[in-house]
Length: 73
Image (tube, rainbow, N blue to C red):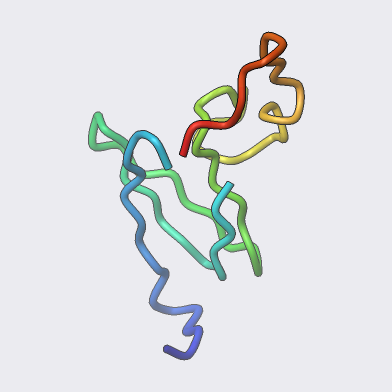
């Protein structure tokens, strides 16, 4: 699908799922409000720790796990 700046891509963020998306994009939040970005590529937060949610601010990198806790997929 070619990137057409006059027709932004739309993504609805579901819990559990950064996702990199070619812009421009419009994200419909759970409350129905729309967050828009016209950047070339955007990072969408999926951990919900971002202070700039729905945009990723790399907060997921600061997450710590107790010893012995592996990643659950």
